[in-house]
Image (cartoon, rainbow, N blue to C red):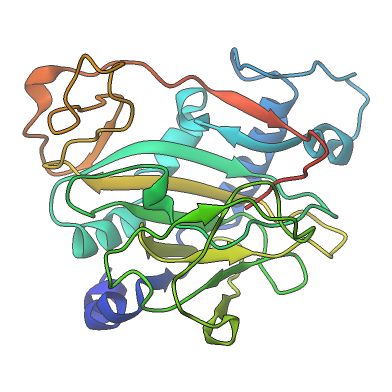
Length: 283
């Protein structure tokens, strides 16, 4: 893009980079409208949807949910946004020439919703080669007021997945927090970005967000990628499969070629809406 190319050493040291303007105004409007339509149950079958009256306002319809999981499986528009040239360019810089996507999420983060405590994405999506990389695309300006991302620069470099524990901090949802990483909150950096900007970051990078104290949404479209060479031992089949060879093939190739293509593609993960259960999660 070659912004990441010019900053590849910086990315290696810090674990993240901002790529400005991957989505323009029309695409942003389309993505926001698609999120609303999905939450109204108007875009295919999705688990967890509550049919809302046609005259219900968008704030009410969207605020019923915390996150749309796997929206790329419902929406050709959002599948396409997972292949944005500027994002793929960044991914091939930091991962390599062959890249596959395994997950998408659309976080809604309505006014009043809290954030998530420190965590590492690789704790949830294991890769064999530490290639997990997120593309976090702001659909609204992400600011201190509405709960932008915070990161601990360089926290990915140790290659350690830190232990997690439950917490009782009302600023955050119920997702367990990582601890024991020996870094102070004073080391954290706020990543404020404009709508349409993408934050590309390493799966081992510690990150969190704070509550949305603003009167508008802080929506974000998030995709997770990894090297196509690496196996994805996400959910080994009940002990019948060795972790070393387990490979979830519910993936989308976004760059290069897939050396495991002979295994085929399976449709395992289902789109679903995570409801607001009172814990008010949102990242």
